[in-house]
Image (cartoon, rainbow, N blue to C red; front, side, top):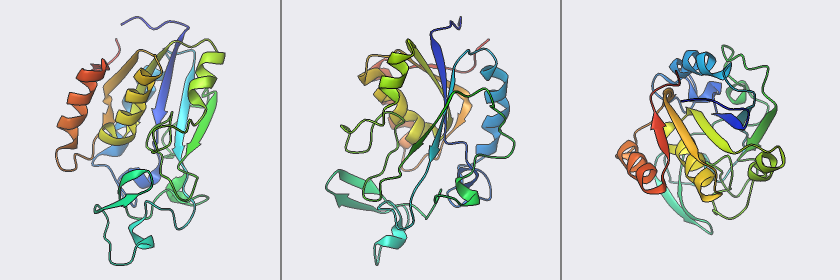
Length: 206
């Protein structure tokens, strides 16, 4: 697959809390870093996303008495999965993994920083309507196709890819540069959603 100057690589949430030893570790999450490095040099444009929650965020099970991580609650914005406290602003867990070296990145987009709404997608908050501003940024820069890598394949990568399609961008997920949580069959659901939305999944970029 040929990479053009109008393509952008969006690297999703490669942070300490999503890697082994972190508060919400994705199995083998740190293994995405080497494939990300192998592909990143092919792109003229790289964007990083960073989960950036305030203490007491709505998505934290600790905020809801009697609730445990991985249970669901209903909110004004729909069903919310509850998580362990993770990626709290200013903590080591919220930092990018120390082995991730993408100094050429043009933008770091922080998401999930509003206390009462989560944000899996790089493009929209979880109400599915409030934009993060990334779509407008890409359009103003003249970027036309979105490649995605990072964590987790079946949550933030998935929602970002689907929202890229919603906004009219072709979306390509690089599977070797992603890792999944696979919670209650979420990987299969993700792949079904990708097929329906026209998201292209490739193992790697040659």
